[in-house]
Length: 281
Ligand SMILES: Nc1ncnc2c1ncn2[C@@H]1O[C@H](COP(=O)(O)OP(=O)(O)OP(=O)(O)O)[C@@H](O)[C@H]1O
Image (cartoon, rainbow, N blue to C red; front, top):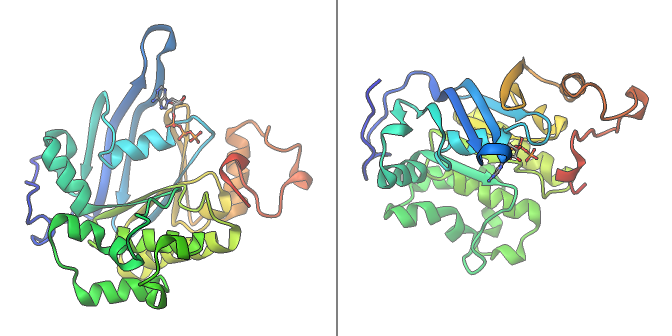
């Protein structure tokens, strides 16, 4: 497949669409060497369809973050290929990769990563400021009102709750109308109410704006907001579920881990969290 060029006009030029926002093929990556070599990804292949919300789940250390980082152009890989739209990441030099991440990928991390001296509005528009572009006013208004921040735009991050800060981060991810948004435990630092709000906004972006979202999570409740869940184990893609519910996701996770998380259904928490390390609530 030929790569399309990534330049300063990347977001102004309509990108050819294939219905697939991003795809990885035969992706492998190992850390270390010799006795300490760890295979994090072992020939993983997966496509993320446009306008779909996908959750990536699996036991701790199975390769979820590595997969997300490679798919988002944040990390290198040993073999295989990654494409965003029709752009093969392997064909890009560092400058082109930086431009692609800036213009076509949105990120939401567990830590909100906002600049403390900037207002909420300045944080939201920061990716455009860095790219030397002006915000599309209509789109910005729509994004800001969708995440319920219209009354908070002058506030600095320190004057906002955790949930509001993460909403700023979601708005910042959306502002450049990226081809895909990657979230790494986006609700990991939030209580369950604020987490539910942020997940609701991510789902609204998918349903109402046709946004593509891929989210790594340990939490079956969070995965229940997705259209599809893919399950990794030992660096391999081992299962997939459409229209997930938290109960079905938890059951699948228990099966994948040999059922050693709880001693039985009676012991399951009301709001199950597969790996409680990542949850503060
Ligand atoms: N920088 C690194 N150096 C060495 N090994 C690493 C490095 N990063 C990850 N690994 C290893 O690669 C494997 C996959 O790690 P990864 O962080 O992708 O898993 P994960 O499923 O996201 O884990 P968690 O759910 O605990 O965050 C693990 O065995 C991990 O120890």
